[in-house]
Amino acid sequence: MRAEVSPMSAAPAAGAPAALADLPALRDRALGAYLGLALGDALGATVEFMTPREIALRHGVHQQITGGGWLKLAPGQVTDDTTMSLALGEALLRGARDGRLHDTGLIAEAYVAWWRGKPVDCGNTCRRGIQRYLRDGSLAGPQSDGDGGNGALMRNLPAALATLGDDAAFVRVSLAQSHVTHHHPLSDAAVLGIGHALRALVVDGSVLRARAHLDALVRDLPVFRYAPYPRRASGYVVDTVQTVLHFYTSHDDFEDAVVGAVNQGDDADTTGALVGMLAGARCGAAALPSRWVSRLQPAVRRAITEQTEALLAMALRHRAPPPPA
Ligand code: MN
Ligand code: MN
Picture 1: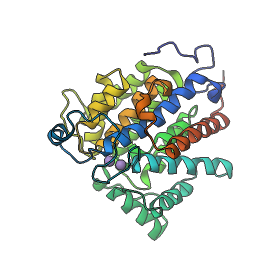
Picture 2: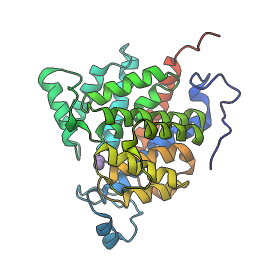
Picture 3: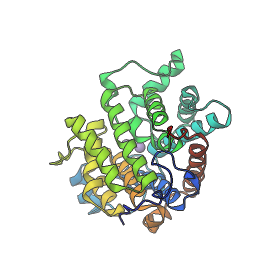
Picture 4: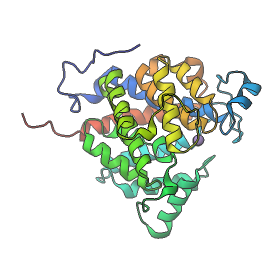
């Protein structure tokens, strides 16, 4: 379903919604994005680092959440893409509670706690950044060619939700959380471009406005062009963005888009997660495939549902004042 008629249309201008968390449609799209992220992660992890040919030989078309993969996951278990997002969201909520709104120190501490909790996986760049913070307390590494992975992009959803209604805060928080582990101009551009598209989907329910943000990203940085699709799905942020945008834009249906992305293999949990996030915001939580949602580990589903509500409430409390008339 493509809703161009915004439930916000009778409300104040986009960006300063009057009752952000009270709108059932907006909440459904926000939850659709977060659950969609976890579904793509859980589905894709089974075939992470496989080639499309290996996937076809073993699974035909991989389309059931079964666990397994190189991480030997339980069915419905998620990986760092989802659990680092939850860690970021918790840090943002704690900051809002404790009078330390958008505090990057709390975010870095949350990544440390996440890492010490022995996550099932942790990317090399994330580990390096967390270790640098532990060593010298710095909240950002220097810009580095080695930081062009997708690790900051994969976990930014909570920053987009916590700052709905305040675009300047969205940019600030997104770049700050990214630079704890990833400091690279293409990572930054992807985090902001895909984040703006996600926010347009969630706040306005507008597929067209979201698409305009994605088109702007590709126009400003042609390295992200995805047509014709180059068929690389690695953890390099350029390959990831091309794969995500190709499958998100070429399928209206949530399941078709996510299945297409994960069957490209390679960093399949992360491309699946990001396609799931955008396509889940587009269709809303109520339209997600129930056989997948019921497979997600109950604790993960609960954590996502509670955190989505709390982040929207936070966004409502801290949204930017309306511009002067
Ligand atoms: Mn992962
Ligand atoms: Mn991955």
